[in-house]
Image (cartoon, rainbow, N blue to C red):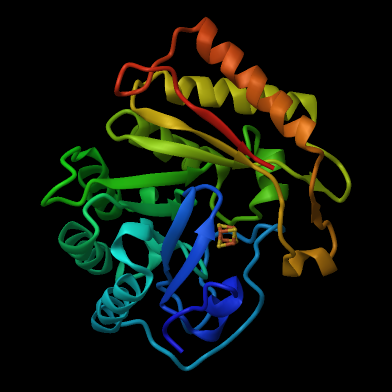
Length: 285
Ligand code: SF4
């Protein structure tokens, strides 16, 4: 199967390369692109990850992806499509197909759904690779919506301290190296920060972690390149629910309080986005 069913977001684990979903964050129909139809490949091991273990013998190919994407757009109706979003079963920036697939998707977006955004959801670890950093910088920094990529990046920043990073993202990549790369990227390209806020083993992020995350968020926003924040909660089951140190949802009020606190510091520092307006801080409990 290469086309996912809109009723079943688990279709990615059946090998779907293109999977249409109604997305809270996209506010409408989002056409997901999955670069890993055969197995999950990621540099993080988040306890809240929604990808269940699976294995198929389907290999990713740009040709199949583009053919499928055209078919899905025609079936859904071009006017329905809010975005084409690279996410799927793992971290897209470590796929060897990333740049070719993004270029092909951008061409189809420009031709068939010019008002739709092209989005890449990433955990940021690809920024440690010089070539990937430069590719993403030029793809995201180009503001022209027509005839270009105009890539929107949604970049994960789950923690402000190494301790919470170790619990939330469980990566072999050192926190300091990753944050240095994200800071370097913020100095030259626009992106939206995505932060999952949940409890680990029943414990919410401690106050010192919340304060460190907010300082880091403020420092990144001060670059003037950030386009906003998305704070989201655990809304779906994950394989980590059945293991040690599971991630669990926190009350909506907890997420709203973190968002309000961030808005207050951004306002106090008179931080603005690239378009000169206050940065949006959205909450998806
Ligand atoms: S970065 Fe994304 S794909 Fe990777 S483990 Fe975390 S939630 Fe799952």
